[in-house]
Length: 166
Image (cartoon, rainbow, N blue to C red; front, side):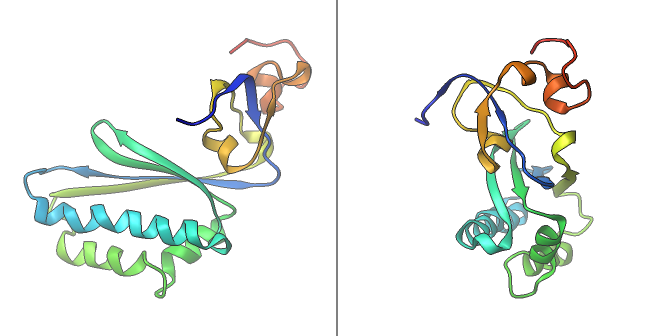
């Protein structure tokens, strides 16, 4: 079990970061032969990204969302993410092409992603009695102090103003 940081912490984000959410949906779960290949492609991609820091992946964590596989990935930049997606020598482009050829618009398997480019003054998080997690695991964490007590202060929108507590 991961070590818990007692108290309240926030992420220290130094520079822009990309949050990439990706998942799949088993629209017809009995058609294992349709969803198996895309399902096992993701761990291969993540191993490559985690094994080569120059590819720009800072952190990934995932699990199930509404009964379907889901990953949250943090990248250094959009350029890193796009380069990984488009490089024929890396393990994303060919499985994506194969998915489109074999499954395409059949409706048997759904895949989705959302990409967010986030600047440090447009991100806010707090972790209370948690292990290092999420954006904090992708960057660094520090204790929530007086000047970062509220969500508004951490976001920078109301610097120093009193705001709602978490």
